[in-house]
Amino acid sequence: MTTTKTKVAIDKAEVGGAEVPGATLTLTGKDKDGNAVQFEKGSLTIGEDGKIVNGTGDSLVWVSGKSATIVNVDDGTYTLHEEVAPDGYEVATDITFTVEDGKVTVGGKEVEKVVMVDEIVTTTST
Image (tube, rainbow, N blue to C red):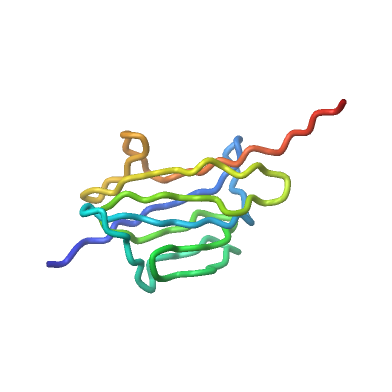
């Protein structure tokens, strides 16, 4: 049985929507049977100026670039986690998304791309 991979665009953006390079991100997943997804070579296409840290195995790790990163995945549930935020930004909350029959959903809503938003660090003066 052959499974069709779904291309999922992942953007790392600031609140205004501009791409934020320099975030270290990790993607893990579970297939429909609850088993850890094993990512194959070629599963990860990095955006401009990004860098692959780990491109195979049970997690993909990369540093975001100036454009979206593309992952090729099977049906399953995936968690996008920010290990390290770029200087001047807060670490974002994890995003869980589901891929089923070529459709990507976040929180039950179908999306064209998964967008993780970093908020700028704010300091308060005393």
